[in-house]
Length: 196
Image (cartoon, rainbow, N blue to C red):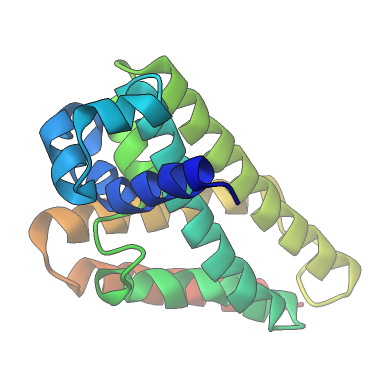
């Protein structure tokens, strides 16, 4: 990795948590220079503009979560157990350093749905990837006779994602884990009910 690539990576790593917590609009150039200890000129020497930093920061935050979930999921052979990774992870999201500022998909979707087309496109792609992963898990479970044949993988994926993101939003706003516990208990029951 060249010095320029290392500097660029350093900027992304230092600013990604700020973009996730404050959003695109709320993150200023002062925040970026303060977090990195670099000058505005140095930032612009590595990135064309704030948009480019924000897009890279989203990718960085999103990849942290995907990597974490993938490691948890791949350690489990049964599809039901793989699906249970989601409520287990998001039940404790307020304590997980990678999710402490909230889910980057939710944070970005909320802010960028009408204001930033490039960030919106990244959030849409992330949601599609998540949905495909859940659907594939359910379909594999059906093929292996681990999950009921009557399960609609498409519908279940929408419900799982909506429950998680809705609970995360409420918990983040209120600072209370109660909604997480209630919702994740409900989601766990839904997942166990899929068993063939």
